[in-house]
Length: 298
Image 1 (cartoon, rainbow, N blue to C red):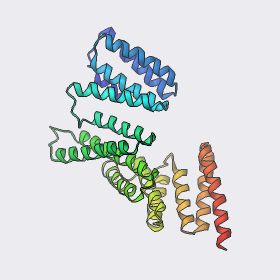
Image 2: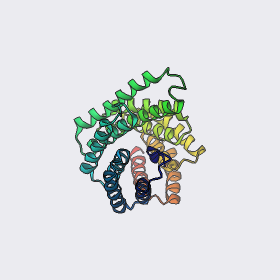
Image 3: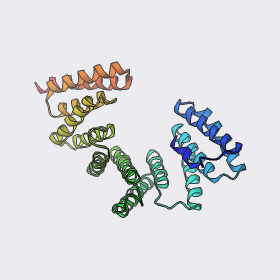
């Protein structure tokens, strides 16, 4: 895994190897959803890292512990762990605009958003976005031998992720024009860096359609949603049923009831095939709503 590049490749010491092994096992446990097990392994790794005064291992372990706490819904704990990680990093030679710092700042903003700490969330998101925009502007003309195209792309994608996360928060608190603006920027980045057919681009297109729909801008919403549905179908997107369900909702709002019903039925079929119970329930509720609206319009 990419994280382990933090350690020198030629490290042969048992101590460091033992930490790496614990971290790998913890990562695997977390991926399997065995979060308590992951937490235990990380505590063991952290003790070893402290004993050996292995700064990189401490940083990486704290960061993983933050992720596990976040996954467990322990937001206060996750916040403390992310802050501890950042402190360790900044005490070293890591700059404030380093992508790793900004990624953690973004996680903190998401925590504040989940805790409904509005001012902190907004400040966090805006810090990430502005810092990344400045960084990208500075890096723009750097030659390949100074900064690789891949590194530049990674920074752009992190900006896209920050915009997407902020947009979701803004949508959640019903600040729709601001959310739309963020989604538009995020989609532009995803299209530029990853291409229109990338799964993330399709999701962002769908999300942009949602925010336009919520503002009653049905024609624009329909255009984005229809395109997202086409791309989802062509690329066999894992969330195609959700995209179709969204398109159906927009068609319903446009009072194109017949088309909406067809879309919902297709979405329902796919959701059932995928065993997505939550989507099945949602689509069934939407079909009931559609029937009600059709009846009311007659």
